Image (cartoon, rainbow, N blue to C red; front, side, top):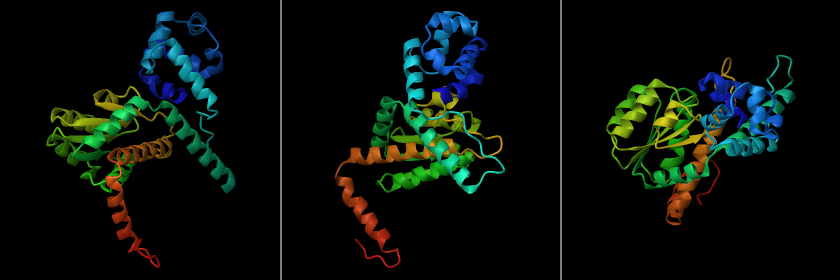
Length: 281
């Protein structure tokens, strides 16, 4: 929840940002405070506090406090303990593993199970699945294509905006698009999502809560994790996106039932023949 608030903060109204600042600065105090106290300390009205709660994806004030309490109870830090120039290898390793674990916990807590069920249903029913993303998200798109083509569904991954915009325009209503973006603000990806929707295809977004891409999608899966992109390419959001792709692939495989097992066994036998010193299954 704290990571989501931090990600959405620039898009909030000025008065709502005052509430966000208070929550980020004193989250534990906010949990135990009534709405009147929060409004007073933030210097806003009580209706503004409610609008803030809804702007970050909660149904209201009580729903916000429940989500905030759940985030704090997980024990996962939301502010990254950054690496230093004098860090030893063991320090670097501990920090990176801790950050990855915390990010996955945050992503798990933010993932809406109803949206997840809807997404698995869409992908199970689709006769073609296309994955779109560029940059670091393009790598995730390729991973999605690798996971899903083994399930016997025609799949493709595009990381070139010109290519996926052309492909989106000629999709059929039975197709599905998985659009991946850390920020959800890429103009090329937004245009492609619109083109896919106009063609009748369903669009699944793996992106930030409240982003333009999320609003343009049929269903959105949020991966709101803190990422330091001033110096490094996105790392933690990529890990969260890859895990969501894994969840979707396993979910579709389970939906397709035992008939899929024979197909996967056949694929594994073929792969085993290419491994040195290993007998085919």
